[in-house]
Image (cartoon, rainbow over all chains, first blue to last red; front, side, top):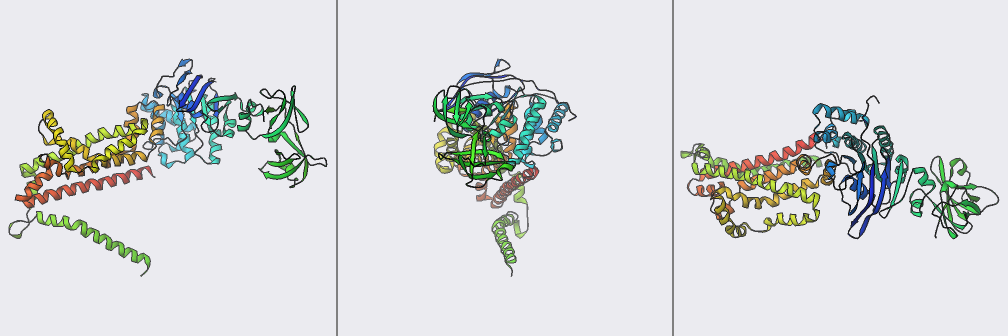
Length: 352
Length: 259
C-alpha cells in the first residue's frame, strides 16, 4: 500500500464495575475489563449475555446503571455519544442512503469542520485502505453487503477514533464474505493500530481476529485470554463448552491429576480437587487406533476436508467425538472396533 | 385472439372508460366556464379569477392557508415523529391514535367544538381567515402522519441516527441532515396532500364564517356560475398537478439511488 495511513490516537479503555438492568434482566452484572492501547479485544458470548450492552455503553448509546467507563484514564461515563470520538460499525447496514460512498466516509470530518480538500483526501485514503477507491461516487444501494460494511469501517476510521467499536459487523453477510471481511478487518486494524472492541457470537470469528477474547456469560466475564490460551486452558465449564467442541467424559480426580479412559492427565486450574466428575476434552485431543484391543466402536464418520470427525461409542455407552486427519479416518468403517485414548496436556474436570 | 391481445384490448378499453369518467366532467367544466354571450367562446370567467377582488383575495387566502398549514404541520409533526421513533417508541401508538383522531370526527362536530377555542384565537391574533391554519393543521394530521410514518418505516432510523451520533452529530444534525433527507418523499407527499386538502376545504371555513376560495366559489355560483366553475377547475387542476409532481419526484429519487 502506497498511502501512509496516519496512526490513530490509541486509546486505553477501562470498564469499571458496570451494571445494567433492563427490568428483571441483568444485562451487565459488574463488568470489569481493560483494553491496552492498540489492542483488539473480542467479546464473545451467546445472545443476551450482555456483550452488545457493554459495547453500546462504551459508545455512549446506552447508559450504565452504575460503574464507569474510562478512556486514557479520563472518565467518559457521562459524555454524550457524539462527543466521544468512537468509530462504530453496526450489525445492520448503516450507510446514509442519500449520500455517496465518499460523502459517507467524509461525513464525520465535515461535522468536525475539516475543509473540503482535507475531507476528500482523507476519504480517498480510507477508501483505499478498505480497497474501494473506485466506488467513491456510488450510493449504498449500489454496493454489496460486504462492500457496505467495508465503507462503514472506512467511515468509522476516518474520524481517527480513540476506539473502534464493531458490533457484530459480519453477521448479516454470507459465509464466504464473512471470512474474507473478518481477515480484512484484522489487517486494517493492525495497520492503523486503533484500539478495538469487537462483539460477536461467532467463536471462530473471535478466535481468528482477537489479541484477547473475553467470554461473557450472564452479564459477567468468565475469562479474558489470548485465543490459544482460551482454547487450551478454559477457566470455566461455560468457556470450555461455548468455545470449540468438547467431549464430556467421566473422570476420577485425585491429587494433581485425573484418570480419563484409563490414562492420567494433569488438571487445569478451576477443576474439581477430588472425586468423580466430567472431564471436558477437545475432539482433537482424542486419538483413534484401529487395533485388536479395542474400547470403542465407530458410529459414524463426518468428512470435513482435511479433517474428519469420528463418532465412537465407548463400552459403557458414552459417545465420544474425535477429530483426526482424513487420511487416517478413511480407513475406518462403521461398527469397527477401535482403541480410543485421550492425549491432552491438561484437562478441566467439572462437577457432573 | 391470443390472450395477450385480448388483455391489451381490455386494457385500452379500461383506460378509455377511466379517461371518459375522469376527463369528462373536467372538459364539461372547461366548456361551461368558457361559454360567452350568444353562443361564442369567452375567457371572461377565467379573467375574473384575478380581476374579481373578492375571488382574488379568497384565492390568495387559500394559497396562504395551504402554505401555513403545510409549514406548521410539518414543523410540528416531523421532529415529533422522529423523536418518538428514536427515543420514546412506546409513545408511538399514542401519537398514531392522536393523529388519526380527526378522521373519525365529522367536520361539523369539530367546528362546534372549536368555536369556543376560536373566540380566543381571534381575540389574541385578530380576526383573519388565516386563523383557519390551526384547525386545518388538525384536519391534515391523519394524512400527513400516514405519509411520514410510511417513509420513516422504510428506513432504519435508529441505526442511521446512532451511526451519525457516533460520528459526532448532535440531535439537530441527525434529524436535519440524516433522517429528513431520507424521508424526503414522505415529507413532500405530506405537503402536497395537505395543499390539496386545504384548497378544497369548504365546511369548516363556511361554518366558522371565513371566506376561503371554496366558500367564495360557492357564493359566486349563485350569481356568476361561469366564474365559480372556472375557479373550481383551476383548483382541481392545481391539486392534480401537485400530485403528479409528487409521483415524479418519488420516481426520480428511486432512479437516482439505482434501487
